[in-house]
Image (cartoon, rainbow, N blue to C red; front, side):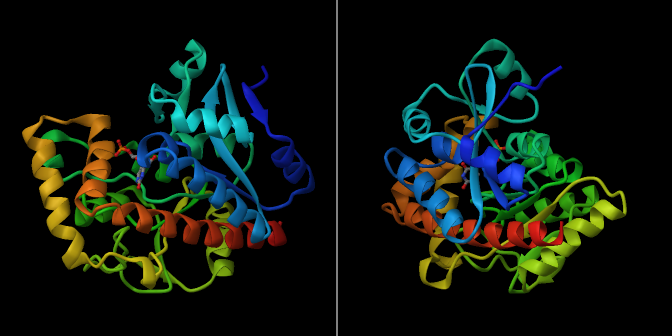
Amino acid sequence: MTLPLILSPEVAEARAKGAPIVALESTIITHGMPFPQNVETARRVETEIRAHGATPATIAIMDRQIHIGLTEAQLDTLGQAREAAKLSRADLAACLASGGTGATTVAATMICAQLVGIEVFATGGIGGVHRGAESSFDISADLRELAETPVTVVAAGAKAILDLPKTLEYLETLGVPVIAYGQDEFPAFWSRASGLKAPLRMDDAAGIAAAHRMRARLGLPGGQLVANPIPAGAEIPRAEIMPHIETALAEAEAQGIAAKAVTPFLLQRIFELTRGRSLTANIALVLNNARLGAAIARELARAA
Ligand code: PSU
């Protein structure tokens, strides 16, 4: 049985040569940023990856196929497709089977990347344990995916809209390595600091690639989370962003926003409350993650 996969010519060529490839998600395009910044950012991220010696592979579901690498036109369509579903492990297959258009979250992107042997994936932030999870049970499927699927995910940590101590606890329970890059502290997306020490620290891409390979040698399932702090010049310090986060969270609760709608709602409100600064920061951190993702992919290709 052949898989419902379409590789862009660029990705197919890189794959045939064993050249470094970095997977990119599409939920950040459809649900994470407003148009047109979403499409502009997606293009800039791809350009950044190419400039750093790797091939970008943006992943999305269209016309009953998993697309690995999108054309300019597809990226543009997706960026304006307001009806695109936000797909995770649970709904990926149903969307493909029914012919819907779907954007892949971290979890779904990892699954698709692994199907074609892509080992590195760069994004903005991962989902995590939501605040109040003790009653809502709202824990992102991204966390379990990291425990199961062997892809190294580069993110700027997790947002302080989540319960970060519980997110780290849960990742530890699942046996997921959480590696802070270049600092001891686990970064909190828009801010470099979270007040929490990361379980592991590494200072170079080669070390991260070696740890990825070692997990495979040991037969350990799952990937790694690389938490790459936002560049200092682009960050919104914790003291400044926290009041906006609290406001957005209180509004989400008052309006009964739940499940998949929570993260997009909070991102949009924080964008408004910071007068767009959160988006500028988000773009800077994604580009930064793209550079590190490319460096890790190059190291993995070198070692292969
Ligand atoms: N963080 C962002 N922007 C995003 C997301 C996270 O800064 O768009 C998306 C990612 O695709 C992530 C998903 O996988 O949100 C997590 O959603 P949930 O919390 O519903 O699992």
